[in-house]
Image 1: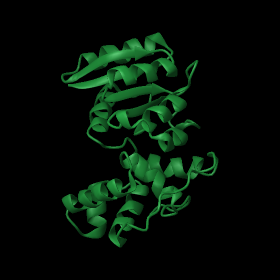
Image 2: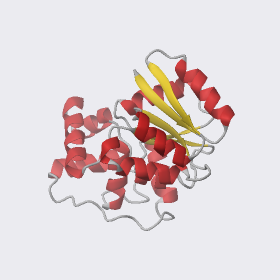
Image 3: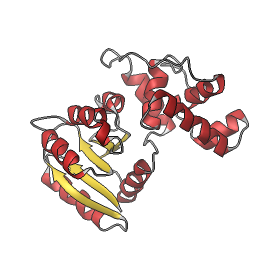
Length: 221
């Protein structure tokens, strides 16, 4: 059973998402929060598999709540999905840098929301190649001072190559075709790279690829 927490200051939004998700086999909404502080408290209390987190909330915003969740080692398995009104909200890049596994627009189709919840719990990032590129292009230069980039010295040459391809939004299958290897081999390289860098998921690997210089604004691969 996938356990989901909803965090949004609009009761109607929470009610709509809860009705949709609770109707799905294998998904259960275990809690609702109307602000970031309440969301943080409930995440620590309930340890859900996924949190659908609005950015703009009172008391504590979703960005700060996301930072605190992803910084807590006891919550390492909790995945945060940012909810935004606009696809390229100005805070989306910061949220992903802070540890969110991706984002969804609030008017997304119901089946896409359900798919996204299942995907993020399985460890996939909700970042399409196009969105990844636009995020880097439009917001990297405007974001706050980057955190110190993780050292890539202990990555093999192939792992760096794979990381760069993840950074421009390629899937494991696309990476496999680019490098002429099997999808399983590509997946293994991605997994090893994430482990070595301490990345929570592919979204974090995208951020690290940008901050390390492997991916640059203007580079489309």
